Image 1: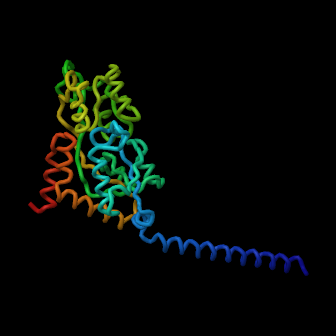
Image 2: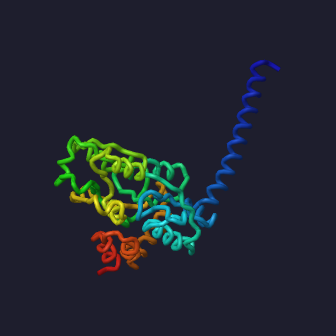
Length: 285
């Protein structure tokens, strides 16, 4: 057999082998795709559980209570979402997230959805899809009562505590504020008490909740107007239209029933016009 003929046969054999392997992989992939045609929603129903990324350092929206359980307004919302999708609020697994890692956890498949005080921004919409908005908040400033602060402009050149990943950190920096950002709220509150920052710039409703605690209520306050108000949304992976529709339906049902308005009262969160207006809009009032 000539060398050229031998080489031709060898190449042909290799090509056939590669084609067979490709067909095999395609067949397997086709089966897998068919089995998960419903995407995230189908996978959730198949395993009969939903994995939700939530805050655990953000009282009264998401925190760990004295019994070691997840608690807060967003935890109630997450359980109600689970009830709507799987007919039982118990079929949920909570995964702790913070602002700096929640989107990555979603994209990596560590969670099915994010319900973690996440403001909807254009930059985030490039990475993930957002549900119907279910809440809204803006930046407030927690500081000592004896600090003479009248406006955000008074913070120019001053050190202010923040949390990594909060969207308004960039805005405040552009205003001349020297942001000192921490991984989570626990570290930021400690730094504030230790005097490392003049104030703590964070979601106003969370700071208002902190002021209900006896150790903060006497000497601390929120002297500045709320700025940079933006709506919150739940985050899902891009391309999950069926799951997103199910999530949106659940949110609208909750709002129609006044679930979030009642939740504000339950968790002693100052009532927001946004939640009331959303309820009225959904109910057609």
